[in-house]
Length: 164
Image (tube, rainbow, N blue to C red):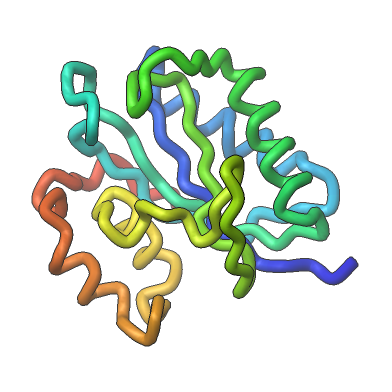
């Protein structure tokens, strides 16, 4: 199978957030037929939705994978389980959250998996790290900077750490 490019969003706000992110990146790099190509900077962000919780660390990784999107989703969910993710409250606190943002040019609408991620164009905590990796990326013919300008949460995304 041909390798496809995908972007994965990572988020953590329970425990050692930085260590959780590092462990998730390491686990993603060990998925079969998958290579981590590029990492964004890590940002500290306010929670969205359920706001009575600690701040998140968020970032995006770009991968190349020979897995289909369903197999990739399964591997990412297994990593979440390995890192003690508990699904209790929607948009609630979590040790790790791994979301497929895009998978090549695929458009998929299924109750268990929507690609591109349905909320990503409204969330600066996803778009700003995505811009780190590809400042020229466009969605629907519109550049990422224009989407960021329209995000109400853009001022709450603060640089936490840049990987070197």
